[in-house]
Image (cartoon, rainbow, N blue to C red):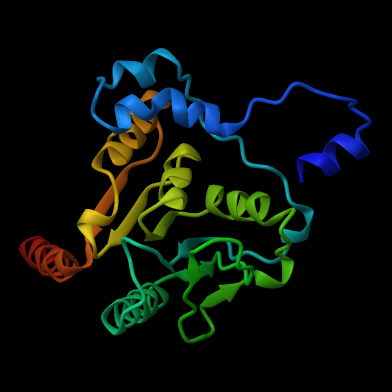
Length: 218
């Protein structure tokens, strides 16, 4: 990709800063050898300005929840997780429109899960290409009422667009707590949307609590 951009833009021999250099800079923090000050000293955070994607014109409901569930180390492909995604998406679709952010493109170890389709579940995978999928997903998230999905990068993107997010995992030891800490600091710094992370086993408890709260206010 970098070679293509250089060639098409006739940039000659530009100086490139590889993302690996940033990882190396922050590695002492990830390994708990230094405090979060190492990250703060070299980071500046900004809210995301969503792109305009002409292809989305007329494709999105007036009000919807953006959803992206995929399998990963913290949300593995199990029968329980598949059932959880299916019931969660259908529960959402019972009260609002849902736009799935699935790409249909496999570029890493994250595998999308697609729940059964119904009238209030909308897909846009026909618009996705490797060159534009992040633009399209960002534009969809930025217009959503909320984001629901797997804990990971997309759950960070939504609050940076000012959209509240709830993200789920089922393997707590499969991700670094410091990643979530930095994400929360970043979101607070830009006054972004809220980010709630939950173990799937706690979802039923939340539903019970919310149901009890609604009964109290009935």
